[in-house]
Length: 117
Length: 113
Image (cartoon, rainbow over all chains, first blue to last red; front, side, top):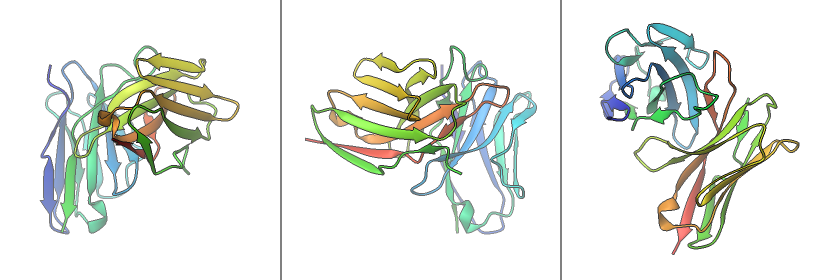
């Protein structure tokens, strides 16, 4: 059972371009969480998705950022018109059920390091 | 508005000794508290968690203590080993439909030979 797969591992974009980050959750997991880690900072929650639904996007910047988790295929975090401040490591995590109760563990991918030049 | 605070950015401990990582939180409504470990260029991995109704949880060399009155938790690692050198994130979870894990900024632990 492969872990959470994120690609690409490294992504370089020029200012103004679009960045697409992909996350394939663990098999059987239908809950996906995206986090961003800026240099020397902790992981900041961005968005929580379930298949075809956005459950909580309270951490998403109001503009240029969007996320989806379609019925088929990976979850996509899309950043339009990237700026230097978007440079960060973006981590995706998945869980088989909503967190809490007997399951408090979310499994993380290795992250995508986005560099905007 | 930082709900989870790890006030020590780094900590150095001699191999074989006890490592104690501290964390403070502001919201009394959290249901679970978690610790994640992160190596460079890798994603965080889950270490141990504790329910808000307990005050201690132990798993091998790792023990988490929760002091609800002080809104404080700590992770004890004993004995510390070289492979424990990593960044440790304290995190919280409130269980409802919008549940999500909220992380602190992390503490970098160095295990000295």
